Image 1 (cartoon, rainbow, N blue to C red):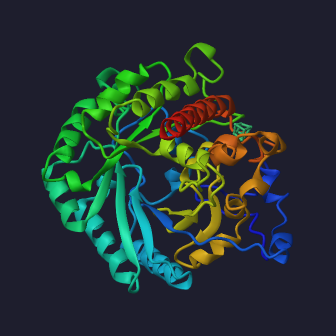
Image 2: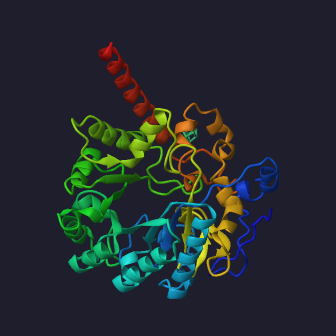
Image 3: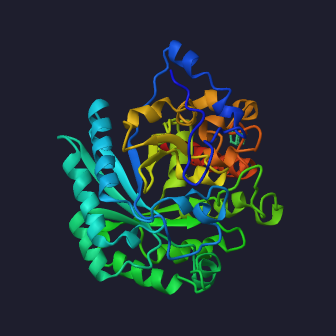
Length: 418
Ligand code: SF4
């Protein structure tokens, strides 16, 4: 099996050799894995980076403010040649692996900067390329600023579900999510979310994505998000790693773990479910013995590939927080089938489950639930990705808390049923 360890990246004169990440690039024995009969899982989610720029300048954005700056050398907008090739590669992959459904996420930068006509053409190209009976679930993650009625009407016609990023009330949101001139985006996002949660467009509203700030009041943040009646919420830990830890990491008085626990208790103790919180649902599901549906919890294999505006096939986008070229595979939809990405050490490492974990994680009693945390958060320069998450203490406290709450509930219900 070919090892793809020296990869060219836009804006770099020399190929990326992933020297700062011996795991997996030097230490993972791909050939031995295949001889033992290991086989990769198919990709099921495809993130199309249809626009490379953004109309906001959020202070924690991994694309523009962290290690990888490859966006600078890529085309601003995905061309028809690239999205047609991407659609055909997705169709080819779905057919080869007998998938019945794929998820295609339009992403950026800010995807709405690509213009609604281009977005409609991309949606049409993806659906047209897929052979029957494969269906595509199309989604978009937007900052919401450009989400007006005309755009929503067009997205409704295209059947594209919409997730919006909002970090809480006006001051909490605007502290991080402002434009290049420092103007906060809350007022525009609030207007967009009111439209999206109204009867006409509610069917499109997939949920709100919130990046955790431990300086904010977690319950007040939850109530702000809940006011838009989202079907689901996603809470993200800000991207960080052992070589670039978050400035608030290790602050006992305002930890990310205790912030999440307070939201969990407020959500879990509600007399009826007010919304779904996917991160918590996944933990509960794995605590009860199920398999996770997300690569961020548990040991499920990663099934995501990213296609950049120039056609480059990349690994999970958040790897850009680790080092220049960390997400690169050296492949392109213009020249390579997506199946070739399944031979890439970086993608294989995220499909190995427990075998990809550090010694510390393997000894950890929570590893089956935690899964070692988000892959980019495990990075340490010179070692790579075989480390516990930089958020290990936060994950452990949250998972322990959920475990105890769920098991206490089960015991109480069993007693009541006797
Ligand atoms: S809690 Fe920490 S040590 Fe345990 S599996 Fe998660 S990251 Fe690894």
